[in-house]
Amino acid sequence: PSALPVGLTMDRERSRTLSRYSRSGEMPIDIVAIEPLEQFWGRYRSAVLGGAAAGVLLLSLWLYVLLRYTRHRLSRATQLREAIAKGRIEVLYQPIVALDSGRCAGAEILARWTTERGEAVPPDSFVAVAEKEGLLTDLTLAVLDRSLTELREFLLERPSLSLALNIGSQDLHDSRFAEALDSGLRAAGVPPATYKLELTECALVNADLARRAIADFRARGHSVAVDDFGTGYSSLAYLAGFSVDQLKIDK
Image (cartoon, rainbow, N blue to C red; front, top):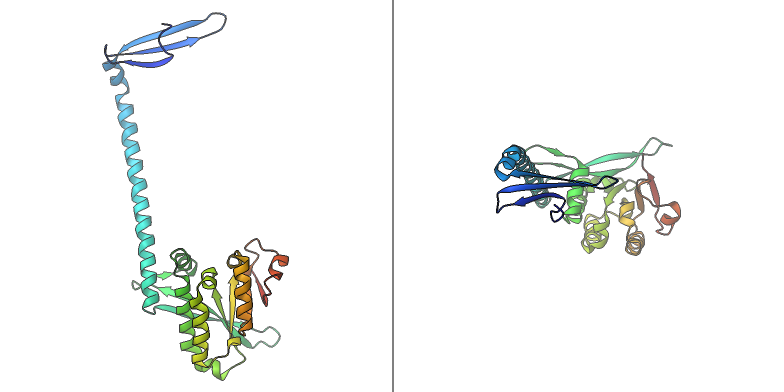
């Protein structure tokens, strides 16, 4: 028995299994059990087959869920790309009211998307898709163009009103946004001060880039605000280095 390793050993030449259990102490003892291989498999066959079937089932279920998720994500990204290209991103305007006078001082531009099937996709959902797929600047440009088209005459008649446009970190990296903002306002005859740009704290992660972009926007006549302050990790001392005009505190 001393040559037999502790545990279960398969002896295929003699079609048997050998099990050795050793116990040390004051009275050391070795227990060796020998069982025909056919009898061993007969006892555990159902458990092995059941475990294998459960493993295959779980693997199939995992692959199915992964495939559905991948298809859904790719499908959503494709739908969003088509919606942007075909001008199906809608824009709503949430009034900004001055509490001292009760008058409307402007509005926040809100992007909304309803698919061709009539499904209203929540903004948090499709903005996240746009960020992940590199479509955020395309989405921002679509919203900018839509707002200029819809409100040009209204804004020209009411030069004191301002519109708040949300932009993200990709817009700071992509020169198309600054160029389209300048050319669009110039073509519409709308002064830069009309459009206030709102950044989230996440867009300030690349501090040097954000600082340069904010300074450039302010030099062009736009005011810059940090939206949803308090949802990230920025402190007031940190934000002071960006020279923003406003902080919008999260609820």
